[in-house]
Amino acid sequence: MTAVELIALASSISLLAGWRLYLVTFATGLAMKLGWVALPDQLKMLDVLANNWVIGIAATGAIAEFFADKIAWVDSAWDTIHSVIRPVGGALLSLAIVDSGDPAWQIGSFLLGGGAAFVAHAGKAGARTLVNASPEPFSNMVVSTGEDVATAGLFALAIANPIAAALIALILVILSVWLVLSARRLLRRILEPKRPRPV
Image 1 (cartoon, rainbow, N blue to C red):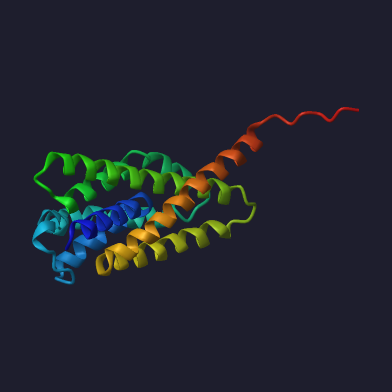
Image 2: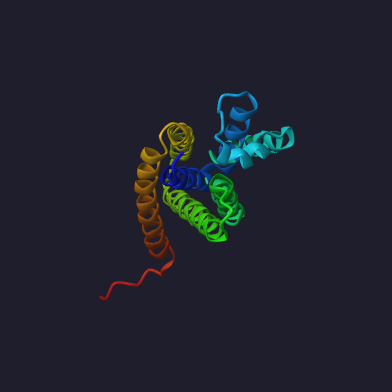
């Protein structure tokens, strides 16, 4: 795997951690445990994800997140709790993927991973603010299921073709920024007191 592919893989996985940290950790660990993914030498640091305890904790978190994410406003509370956990998890996954002996690369990959996970998390939280404002209860389930499917699909693509996954991840980062700005405008409109019309 070339340096460009490693960076692309690290950024894609980190972005996915901003959406579904537990699912990404569980899927990676289980795939390694069952031998579905043969890691190249430079990714051997990720072997820790195949530990039974790590897989068990990630599976528990993934199940809890699956259900919490489907309920309006519970998902926003869950996102608030994970505002630090997801970026740190994304940063650590990126650091493990790049695994360079050069401290500059280590710091760069940590910042890249944390930044990608934070932007994805912020976009997800922003999108959920918009969705939670809708009066019907089913939009949350539809959006959350879409995120589950997109996470699984992009994860598989990141393993098979890191460059293509990174390009899609870049598009998703731009979309995330747009969602954050849209949610901010919506919140401002909701929270601003209504001014009486002049007579």
